[in-house]
Length: 387
Ligand code: AMP
Image (cartoon, rainbow, N blue to C red):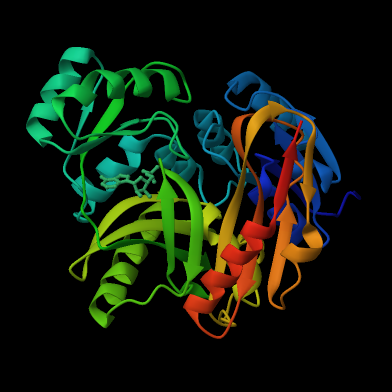
């Protein structure tokens, strides 16, 4: 808040952005948190906030010019990324790079880069704009297949087509659930993976560093449970690191990346990558000396990340609330937090419409099994009263 102080413009103020804001403030950085609604989680801890639609290029440019930040940090995918490309050319610093934000905003950009330019193994895929193209794509890929809007995340608009009877519903779902409304979809061959992981990969002045692999369970494309470390064979972890290094090197810049991978018979298939902290990586708030948010802040500020200290087996469980209300009460917390090694984060989101991730339970123990059981016990004890 002084002329010589450093300022960060945080584009996206959800639960992940909130932790990034806190970590940046630990280095004395002034944080301006942006999102499309007021009182978003990161705004509650930032120095200042701005409410506007970040997909609106003019508004985004206005915010950047007015704030003149030292760091522009995209925290969500839904951003007018061509503006980031433009301001980066003028000398603004975008985390990790404007190209990374632009390519990963759209599933097509990152998929083509990985599969067609870098030769990384992925599921077979086709893109479709119209119903006709969609049916042709399904025919070529075969059943079962997964359908997603090219602009979507957290499972919005995503479905699996198992039989021909599902085709109609999948098209409708993808047209309604996309971030930018109706539009282009990706049809992916269904990968019958043994397990899936997020490999958190940090690019910093110290080079590339990997966190222990994170295993997770998704329900309809939305994360519900994650744990660390996911046991892997030497071959699988080596392949996973090789792929993560290749894709993050191609995106460039400094920061943390969540590289999503499927593992089948010790072979690794690339799914997608976030050039920012990953929701499944919230487990690192209890499992590591520097969480994924702390690592992101350090890397993007140009500070060294010499090594990451892993504390031991840990688990996270998303607290998803259903309803249509702004009156939500978290109850029975004395029981939730009764056991040692359990923590709870409530994000402070102002309301729920449908279903929404409102908090996370974290647990750590001597073994992975115990950590997962402990987190489940804590979650079962949590009472959520929705009015
Ligand atoms: P995504 O939004 O692409 O990360 O997809 C969310 C989740 O859906 C993944 O973490 C997987 O559990 C599942 N999924 C996505 N694509 C596929 C696929 N091609 N085959 C099997 N499962 C998939």
